Image 1 (cartoon, rainbow, N blue to C red):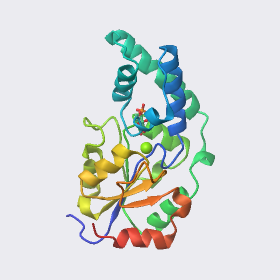
Image 2: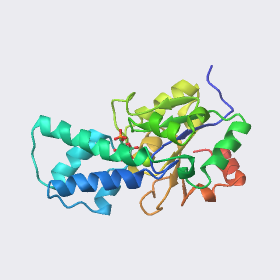
Image 3: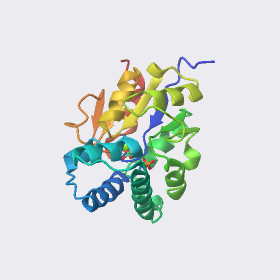
Length: 223
Ligand code: BG6
Ligand code: MG
């Protein structure tokens, strides 16, 4: 049965719960440099929320490079190995400020919570930072075929949580993710730079700004 009354929450992972966006940037930057491709912070912004394959395609396009399928696959493996070397050094100390307080409030008040991430490493990261048990469902890069801004990842989350998208609230740090939430008619909450995430229904610099009163405002908001 679809719940008409209780709002549900879907969290992106990278850049929202943990600051892994900086590790993705480092690993992509090193890879781009090894191919003599210059890669700026602005370009990196366009990779947030974007799958591993699509990210490498974009980098190669910016650098005007064509490579064989074998090299492409080797580069993806190399990037992921470097990325995971950073991830494996993470612990619960790496949860971004305010995230735990929000998750605890939602848990204590029985709000359904899911994860909606493009990453294929989402479960590994949640385990590293000891947050796995907070999520009723995890929808990650292994379960979706269409990348954000397509809303597939969030719609799957809604289906599993048995809530209508318009009764769901998404926390996102990427343009593509905010667009995905908006495309699904969900309440979109941008975490990060407001100028980048201006399409969001709400904007906050970090979860430190999200008090219980703010959560109540989000819960009562009608799109
Ligand atoms: C997203 C990140 O959450 O996951 C992207 O914002 C990343 O930067 C994508 O490319 C895929 O992640 P992974 O861990 O499967 O390479
Ligand atoms: Mg993200």
